[in-house]
Image (cartoon, rainbow, N blue to C red; front, side, top):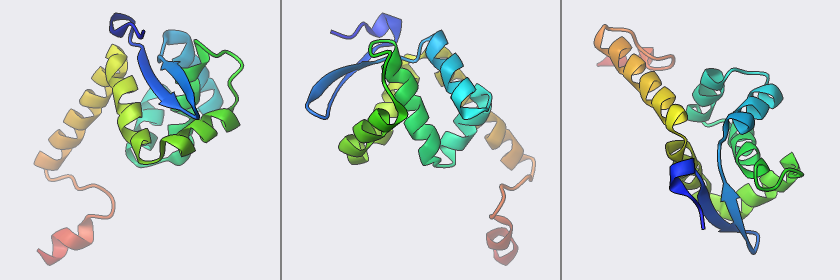
Length: 129
């Protein structure tokens, strides 16, 4: 059974029970594999990067299954289908400092919008308004 105090999340995929956790080591491996900082990876996740979704799942699997490959993580992601997003959300929420980073990024975007700074791609909509 997953220990939520440790940030663990249990899921079932590919006919197996899997325990996911974004530990400090898992996040370091994610950064190394992505070639990005955690903040950059979270921004890419919010932008919908499939590569980062798979990397986060891979990193979260490795504490309990150290030999997990990216292809295996991709197979789990494919098996989860539309549940992948909610699963990653649970894993990120269970990891306190990742959730804090995501909230901070959201607050910074909201502050930028209130100061008249638009996000890329919104200029056309705003100009026609």
